[in-house]
Length: 358
Image (cartoon, rainbow, N blue to C red; front, top):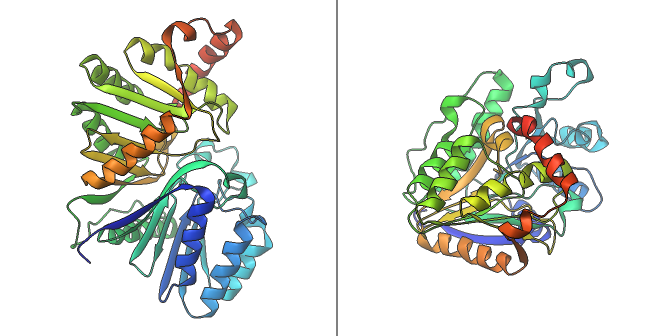
């Protein structure tokens, strides 16, 4: 397989349908990694029953779920049914009442959303297995090509880490694509590959940087790189939700707006639906799609994974999605933002001490 093929899905329901069809057609293996997997009547139980059916047919089905994001699932009857049918279910860093005092157990989560079928078809993006996300505006990509081998390796590396409780190295597959890579991020400083690529790409931008993120709480290095890019004439635009699924995080996001606007960064708030997409495109040359939000929690504390690409057609599609989303967004003007209500200004300031963990 030398060429890369892809298809984007911009709503969770469409992504679920594609993932379901690929799992249903699986002939050898299914590797599914999710931060959130809910046993709900909208999608979770449907996926669970399909994985049980495929395991009973002799397909190797491996499931890696985060212990915090999928907390309710770990206590549902579905997990027992899966294991009885032969599905290998592994919970990443399980949450336990007797470990609640240990604050580190609530961090360093597996936030990735990854599916690999038969080692040939990959899925990734921001879509979780959660019925309430059905109508959210998200970005999910189905992909075929050599990059799928990297996605599968990343799955098995993190799975091995949970089994052995030791950090795992990320061995690059011998066969690789020059234009597509599945780049992971880790709480370990030396393994923040996605974080370092992002900063490097922002610093080298010449024309534009278009970012879509449901939460915008960057660390100082990334925020400074964005401000410096804007000041040297790069068109920096950011789309965030008008209202996300976390009110406190919204206030923390708003707290960056004033500084960003003074630097010339243009900010838009998406109003059509809950925005959960995580994409970046720079200069028609580099783009990134995956699970990572542009916040401290994702970039410094979580396990994340994005497809980073230098393919111009891929970048053009991500850019087109961004331009279309701007048409459904409201631009925040600097003079208007200065006159927001006093209570909001105070609430924003109160979030600053917590930015490093949001």
